[in-house]
Image 1 (cartoon, one colour):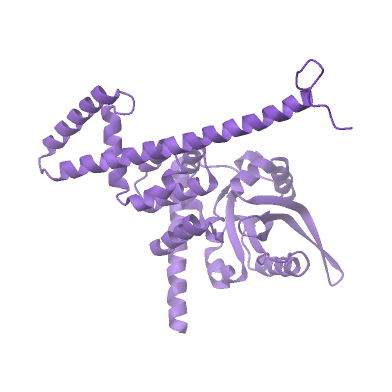
Image 2 (cartoon, helix red, strand yellow):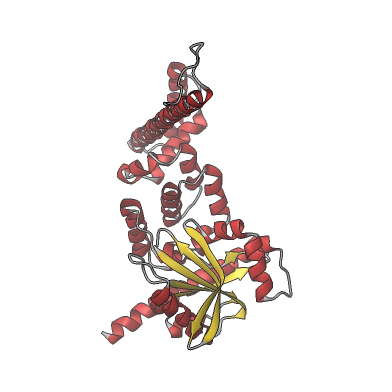
Length: 361
């Protein structure tokens, strides 16, 4: 017998009411999201065009005082005709800065549909053009909230991401590919150092203690690793030539379509770690890689790097990344100096590798 839809008194049954209301809520919520996104696109686009038009007017007159006068007059006139909200003098200046910071609307346009006006205001405080492009692209692709965007900037994500050590044209190309084709590369995924202060470990601790703490705080560890990481296993057992080997942590990255092998090392990077990780990667490639996936990548997390060894071993060609991790964060100015020095070293290594490749040709 068919399930009753209406009771004898004409009322809908609780099951039907629940199903109906779920569908109606979904329809309303989707419509509201569409309206909000459309309104946000129109508002931010309008702000850019207002700023661009005022900038053109001011550029036509060389007197600085003229600029101040016209902006004040425009703000007053717009508030009289359209109300104060959104057209305050301070916001008019922001519109002008917006158009000046991003003079090519063709670059701004695809981002406007995914980001709010506040996202752009946060990023406009950055002086470096590549940093602005990086954060806007990542915020749009990974759908960061305003709070998440600010947190990523405060945590110096760009400076820590591997791509920041590459030439400007290379960075622009990678970001463009991510925006246009939604294809992310390992250089946009891996970073150094990783901030693991949430483990609470200080001074003396073992690799086992670090592994245990990371699993206890797995959610925070995955957040620090970045979007797309999925936990697969700990102490992944591999039997090779009758001997047992164990990989500390195994993850899968959804966008890279690869297994990511992570080994934790207490102390400075050593050359023998390369051979061990290569063995893990080849085993994973042979026994764990699924059809359609890319070959696995390795991440060696060490308390200290070994820049010259890493350069000589050419680990990138083996699919291995080496990164530093910090369980205690130093004062911000010290941390910034450390990261900037590491960034300069990475750029120098990249330049040297280009020179070596050219000399071989």
